Structures are given as C-alpha cells and as structure tokens.
Image 1 (tube, rainbow, N blue to C red):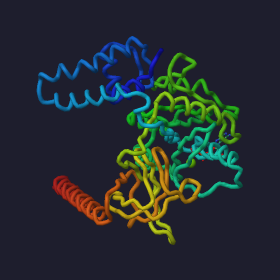
Image 2 (tube, helix red, strand yellow):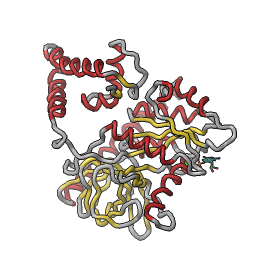
Image 3 (spheres, rainbow, N blue to C red):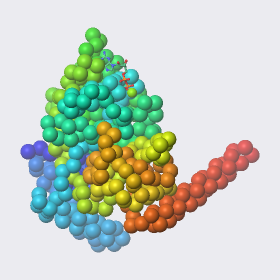
Length: 379
Ligand code: GDP
Ligand code: MG
C-alpha cells in the first residue's frame, strides 16, 4: 500500500519538508509532501529515522534533543488506537485568486448545511463555519472580504489542515493562485484544487491541471496525488464531490486532538460589539475551551462570560477543531494570537501585562533600528 509523504511525516513526527528532503537525498523521485511512496520506501525511512539519533548521539550537542524526539516517536508508534487522542474534524481554508469564486464557493457549501438544518436564512458569520456532511464535521475558515492576503495567512495558518485552492477554469492560474499555493506548501498543509466556473463556456480544466502540475500538483488522473474537483459554485454543482475529497484527505491525515490536553486555541477574527464588548472568534487546536475559563489572549485577558457557535447559539464549551466566539476579554486581540488558559484572573492579567511590556520593548527596539537605518541612509 502506498502512503503519502505528509502522512508518513506525521507518523514519524518529523516535518513534511524534512521528509521530502530525506527522500530526495535517497534518490526517491517525489515532487512534494503530497506525493506517495511505496511500502518499501516507507519502511526504509522508518528504519532510517529510528537509527539516526544513535548516530548523532556520539557527536554530542544535538543528541539530547534528538533522543527525546526519538522517545516521543517510539512512544507514539507504540500507542494503540485506544490510547491515541480522538479524531478531530478537518479545518479547511479556501484560497485563490481574487474573483475566482472563493466567497461563492463557501456560500454554496454553507447552503448545503442550511438545507440540512431546514433553517431559513444564513446567520451572521463569525469567521468560521461548521458543515455537517454525512455525519462528519468539516470546519471552514471564512475568506476575508477585502482579500488581504497577509491577513488571511495570519487568520488561518495556525489552524488550517487543508487548503482548497480555487482556480477559475476559464481564467487559469493567476498571480494570487501561485502565492496561495506557495503559502500552502510552506505551511505543509494538504491541498485540494477546486476547478471553479465549470459552467463557463471558456472553462478549460486541462489547461489549469497542466499549469498546476508544473508547480508540483500532479492530478490523480495523471498518476499524481492531487485531487482536482470540477465545480460550479454559482450553480452548486460538484460541491458534494469537493466535500467527499475533503473527508478523504482528512482521513488520510488522521487528524487527532485531545480534548483533555492543555488548551491551545488561536484567534482567527475579532471585533468590538457595542453591547457585548470585545469579541474574538477562536479555533481550538487542543484541549477544551469553556465558559468561566480565565484566559490570556496575547496582550489581553479575561474571564469567558459567554461563548457562541458559528450559528450564533450560546455554547458552554468547544473542543478540538471547533470554532467559538468568546465574550469577556478586555480588548480586541489580533488574528493569529494564541489563547491560553490560566488559573485565575490575576494570573491572566499579570501574563497579559508582561506580554504587552514585551511587545512594547520589541516595538521600541525596531523603531530604534529603523531610525538608525534612516540616519545611515540619509547621511
Ligand atoms: P472571490 O473574490 O474569490 O471571493 O470571488 P467571488 O465568489 O466573489 O466571485 C467572483 C465573481 O465570479 C462573482 O461575480 C461570482 O458570481 C462569479 N462566480 C463565482 N463562481 C462562479 C461559477 O461557478 N460560475 C460562474 N459563471 N461565475 C461564478
Ligand atoms: Mg470573496
């Protein structure tokens, strides 16, 4: 049985990027972390990565780090299904060139959910939505309206498992398609291509596949590993195929998250509400976030007074992969900020304050460097 590189990387507890390098060193012909290797090669790598720490042990310095890693790997590998953390839903970010149909696609996906719930109308977005597809949850991070790429990166990067790369089949690969692809590759996340606007007379999916294949995304139909799904977001066609593909990749990734682990959540969006005060939408990576928790959110903090799900309904907790809008923090945090739980409000305040002191010092330092640069360049 063949295994994808990122899957093997996960199993071995090494970054996909490193594994790609190792494979290339071994002369294995692979394109990216999405490529597959055969069982034999996989076994070879398992052996190699087990043997390596012993080799570096003699050379001293790095041995400590390496051997702890080795212990974790062995411990993980020895775990039975029962001991592993429970599965968690995939977190998906839709990316692509402006006007290629990201928003329309997300709307089409959400409509399937609304239909399922038999609710009239779509509630206000909190920056993420949970879609229930055949009993399985998929979490979608909304694409910001103003298309600021850096913001999208800050919002989704920490929590995204899968990127759906939207390419209009009539227009083909554009600069932001390449930018999105590069970011997804750098983040080491899995990529699914949605060939959108298939209803358009000028749609040419083969051309898009050729363009993207040249960048390492070889279609499965050509013997590669990338799933391409033809869709028409506007007509709602191909949406189920896309959701199927997401579920398939999510299964391959074997995503897990321990609801009992220390809390690790990230802010993906925040706003100031006239009545409710500062609100932040967070996505939980590990652990469980609960109403009543004392949290540090970067330079701000608070006690969570209320939490809302993506439909705006109040909830009391959110586990791995789940988004929640939280109320009760003092200030509006930046997207990308880590949310941590502490034991008391006093502790939360103290840590938040030291975080803001640190941030101020850093800003002052960069400002100083800046002015020094300016002085040098102007002289
Ligand atoms: P975004 O900038 O990537 O979010 O793109 P939008 O979702 O705003 O779509 C840009 C334009 O393309 C809008 O006018 C949409 O109606 C149109 N559009 C999106 N998907 C499709 C599609 O599948 N077929 C056609 N014909 N038009 C589409
Ligand atoms: Mg849009």
